Image (cartoon, rainbow, N blue to C red):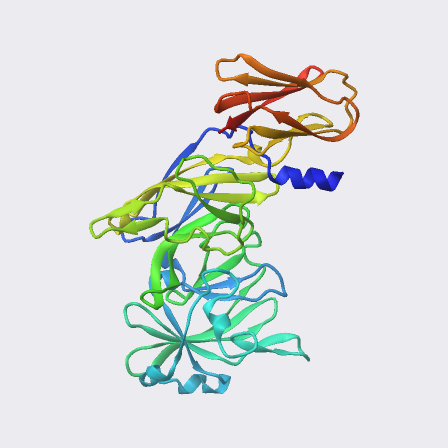
Length: 412
């Protein structure tokens, strides 16, 4: 019986959503900033996009990932598959290097994890329990600068070595470590090879839902990797995309994806002179089984300003059954109803009230239907035939003793 309740809850709708929140943000002219946003707290965090070159995953001793800052145009190549070749890298051999890219569907699968070693950049040593670097990479910057890089060791942090090509030789060879213990509330630690320094370039992992930034993706056409401006979400949330030209939606029954580019870059398009935003598409951002937000984009001004806007609302009340009072839950499905036959599902877990009823009102507030419901403890599914009513919006009130809750019902 409880299983039936759970199945029914998936299809339920009707609770009114909260008021919309309108948000205006900016990545700056030329997209100079990365902007993080948290829906539940309306928190914004902004970081200079070019402040870092490499990001190191630090969430546990067993999780390893290294990402490149592709948004500022850094390209990563595997230049050699042996650590002993670090001193022999020649930029004249660039045509033979293998290009590598961050995965834009998964944070952990960074460009350096795409190398030819077992762990992308290195191999596990069963004696020391370290991962030891075997792959030599070259980073090529948008301004033509080359830096060779090898992550020599992973054990509680990342020990790496790098040097910069000055046109005739490799100079400024530096070896350093970024420890996992740095910034313990963040998913990644960041490092600037240009400034030889650790930097903080993201908020605590529980303080953001998505980030607006430039990143690399594969576009077909043109059939190649390309830098786009868009939105990647926190792995702590899942996201569903839904076409809603009527402007109304339902978070139930959607596919919520873990792929971090579910929102991505295609919520706007360039028409040759400016950008247009597809406001018929809604994105549902789910924290857990009880919390979900509906997000719709309003505007995007492009690189001239980096300004954009969206609105969102908490639609958690549309998820499944709602509590009327302690021990009593209630919901309606299907909603909208094309047959005008609807099911009222309710669970009187601890109810002692002998006065439980369902009342249906039209939008003028007139009572158009009433039914008594069973008052015994347990789960019930009561069918209401409302075919005598005209199509339109109604309010359904479920009352248990002196407690009641009202849900919106659409009859088509």
